[in-house]
Image 1 (tube, rainbow, N blue to C red):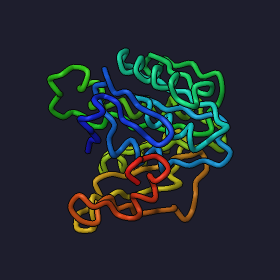
Image 2: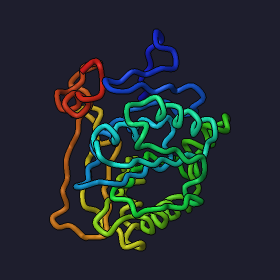
Image 3: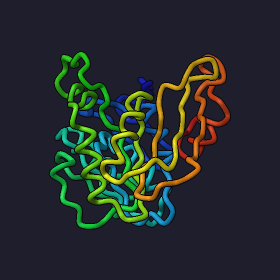
Image 4: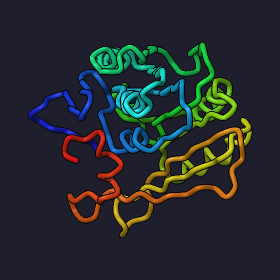
Length: 242
């Protein structure tokens, strides 16, 4: 689900910042803004966004966590350049840094309290003919193992890793996460509307096993083209329309 406004061209305006999507293979979408609005961590002083794309999730988190230093990595050079430009022109510029490299090559100077990722998730699927969109949307089999291994190595002892994924992929990631001593603490089931099954899960992993597991349900639409009050409440601090 993409957000576009032909009158704004490549610029998407939020209440406190703007995102120029020029040069980004993957545009602002529902997955990203939901993750940016929902991911939470107590006393998050350091935040990392893996695969930042336009930088929108990182900037949403910079807005929500006013004291946090926010880093972001992006493998696609044009997208990394766009994210850096968006950071520089945001009100949070002095707390944000973009790194144009693959996340597995990123050297962290600190342990992160909060790590987020809206990663590629089409594994062994038909590859997109446009190379950069393929890079942004498709992952090799070992991608999530690499992601969790890296996250576990740079996550603070009480920190959390949040990802948004299709349901089957999320379940697979949760099972494999224990190999890296990461355990599910919070799951958000995301639905288009109440008539359909969940199409995404937002999962939170950490080093401490949490029982009972916290679960929530988020519905986007009340009716066709009509957002639920729940969805509006989640994004009211960001979207001009809410």
